[in-house]
Image (cartoon, rainbow, N blue to C red; front, side):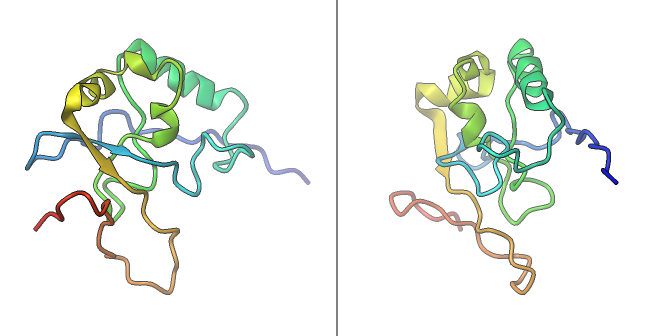
Length: 132
């Protein structure tokens, strides 16, 4: 018996992607391990759901927050690298601000391991000062 595919709901505008200390926009520098923009439908999205999400974000000058960052993660919210690489991503207000030199590059978090502690520290690029 096939299980019907359920569309995931997406919280729009709930997760901040601006670093309050620096005013810079956090953008992942690479796609996370389960990025919906990777081939293979990692997130089990309904057909056309990702295209609709991108279309809606572009129409509103919005952006997609990586699902492995934000409120329920040890990582602060950051714009999805897959979305940032999309041909229409230049319509995003936050990415246009980031393009003016106000970007803060963030690495995706490690693949979740149920045996690890839930509050692992955020990883940053070696060229960036660690936040204290």
